[in-house]
Length: 404
Image (tube, rainbow, N blue to C red; front, side, top):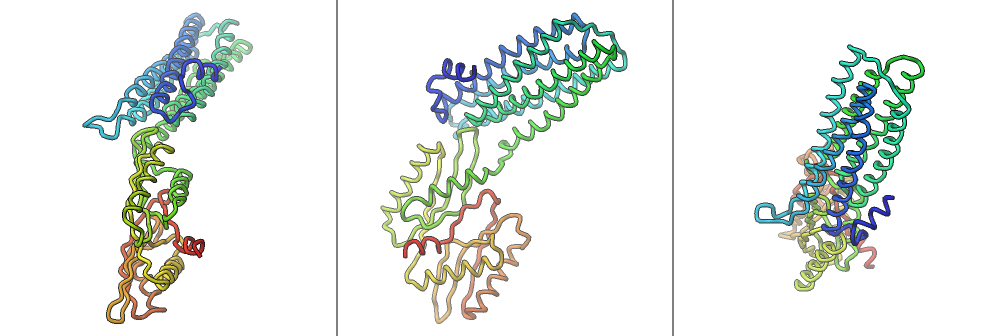
């Protein structure tokens, strides 16, 4: 059924990186959710009123909230697809994240309301008269919600949408909630033990707890969560695949919505490279990332001087000395100055944010290690920090070994 819907209603469905196709995916999922949840709400509400069951009525209201969530998602995708303008030069993609957050908050609000209704039913029990029709409606609801869970998850992963993944999680919660209501109905029917209010209470707590989890998942992109290691590695490997690139560092990735990522990175190249050729290579890197990855990448050119084999050996030796202090440390932008019999090494040292050593301590230990071998050598070090998943460095030793 999912494949049929995708092929029937989404033109060029395989081109998921295209903003228009992505919006169509989101809109289709939202419309399917609205239709299914309205049908479930109507069926459960009718059964709930006829049987006077608070748990079934609460479950019906939960489906009504799901319809509202689908409507919010629909408008979220519509707003997110708006092009960039003067006031929003990076587009409106974060509307989708806001829509996902609204859905999560709405889920929690509904959970609180169900909790209150169920608590009232526990304090003031009412006899519930379940019938075969109510059981059939609940079973049909479980089956439909189970399919919707996989439907939303499939599309959510296809277009990398936190909103739809949150909706998939909500559908999973609905399967569990309706299953609990059905269990309570069967127990009440065959044992005369009224669990209607208690089961509604359990469902409400479950919904609220999962709502918190969905809030965390949807709020991370709004707060600027670091990209995952796999994404960083893919960028690094692609950049380093270009001939003439010696190393990369200082990668920054900015997320302005799904399929709307911007990034900047420093690329090290031999200082003797012709300026026009270096510029042409940088343009090619940026264009390839824009076309292949959908990533607006800005490349900064760092010229690395290699005037002699001695300079290469100094780079290799210094890299090894710094990593003896801590393997997570790395260097870049090394410049070597020789004056009046003395050597000055000017470079940046990159450390992870979770490294216990302070910048002052790192500078001190680097100078101590260097002077053990070269007493007349002075180091001028600028220490930088990076988030562990944002590091993008490579040792030039690898490049030189391959070159030899």
